[in-house]
Image: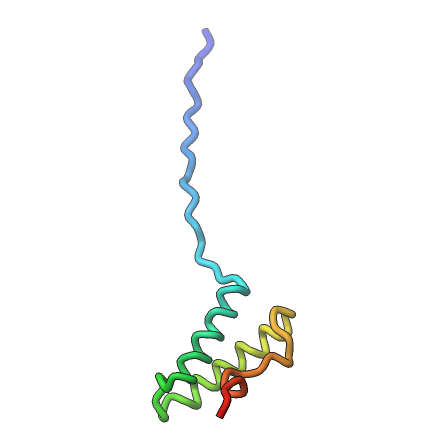
Length: 79
């Protein structure tokens, strides 16, 4: 007698892992720049936000996603 029990395979549903892409980081940099340009950052927050901006900018330059010569928004304004 052969015992023929059907094999049951339970597939584990694949869960999407959270991830960040370089494009997301460029968007974050733009959000920080625009927020600072529009005065949305309080004086007591400027050092931390500026530090975040600098680290993010340096990272994006090191990956080649941005060029070092990219001007900050303040340099683009007339006046």
